[in-house]
Image (cartoon, rainbow, N blue to C red; front, side, top):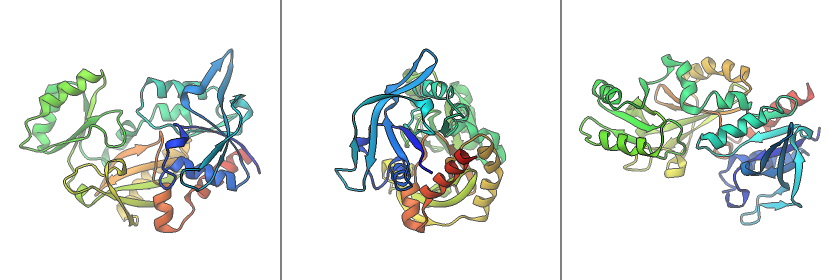
Amino acid sequence: MGLKVAIQMDPIGSINIDADSTFRIAEEAQARGHELFYYTPDKLIYREGRVLARGWPLTVRRVKGNHSTLGDEAEVDLSDYDVVWLRQDPPFDMGYITTTHILERIHPQTLVVNDPFWVRNSPEKLLVLNFPELTPPTLIARDLEAIRAFKAEHGDIILKPLYGNGGAGVFRLDPNDRNLASLHELFTGINREPLIAQKYVPAVVKGDKRIILVNGEPVGAINRVPAEGETRSNMHVGGRPEKVGLSERDQEICAAIGPLLREKGQIFVGIDVIGEWLTEINVTSPTGIQELERFDGVNIAEKIWQVIEAKRAG
């Protein structure tokens, strides 16, 4: 069953084809006989009731430095497509949010993955609030005194932007730290958003587990170990991926959140688990497919496309 597939993503020319999950999704789609069209978020257009995009027919190949070929630039009506992938990276700002509003106008007649309404209403660090029993003590606040009180109670905390990504702006404030006021001043001078604070989980030194769920079901995990002297385990900032299995606690967490993800049309999701605790549910542009495929020898992209093809066939 050949599908017409449009991919909304950041510029394809600069991606790392050995790590980029969107590239792997496109590669598998092409292998399955689907037709690809690529455009960047700034090329998404709403005009007089129609949702359009200006971009290029796309062919991909696993050749470093020559991993994509673009056809002639064209403006297309996305309602003519079977699937649109919402795959640009955060930050989850108003530009990102606007794309979800526009794409929502063609979904589900055109299947947008992940469902843009629930991507907009379920950002990474907020969806976890539905599951307080699974998460470490958490605070969302802009008020400095509220953050001070939280730190006084828990002693050792992580402070980060509510809508950040890739480990940017993540700080550990231990009991001896004296920088809370300065960091608060820095963050509040940049934007008007709250901050998120969580009790520090010491198990992070052993790794931050990324578990991939497809249509609400766990399909595997990788462990991301922080570099020496680092609190952050994100691979963007030097975290080292390692092979790892799913513990009973991981299975418990997935069983608790899976039905909600499935109900809300979140087909490809990556959750972060540190020790016994769920810290994030990544729905905007999760990563980790290629590392997991290499470690476990399982075609995760195939599993994702099987779900999408079944939805389109239905």
